[in-house]
Length: 147
Image 1 (cartoon, rainbow, N blue to C red):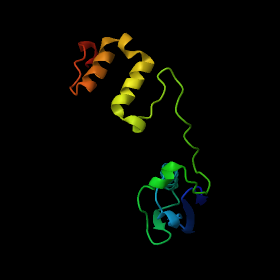
Image 2 (tube, helix red, strand yellow):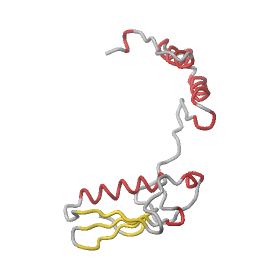
Image 3 (tube, rainbow, N blue to C red):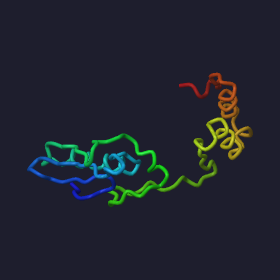
């Protein structure tokens, strides 16, 4: 089991069979980021898989245990500490490509994806799915898609 300071928390073994996890970003009210949550999952999994550890104690530094998601951190704030697991690489680069729906909404995102893939020139069921979405109705697919 890895111990030490990681991104947003630290893990220590204090007594035999007892692991302590302390959130250590009190200036951010110990708010969670995607990186912290990924490392937290890894740390909890390591404790679970370590037969010598029987208890995991969560604590927080500062005036609060954890304020939930740290929304400011999604704008690229650095929290320090070493990552326990590697970062997820940026979006894939395929014929379909990626589209940030949060940037302009789901409907426009679907239009962009459809345009990138020339979905209207593909199978009729693909076009039906997009059309049904725009018309706010359930799609009427051909029987070959049904189990």
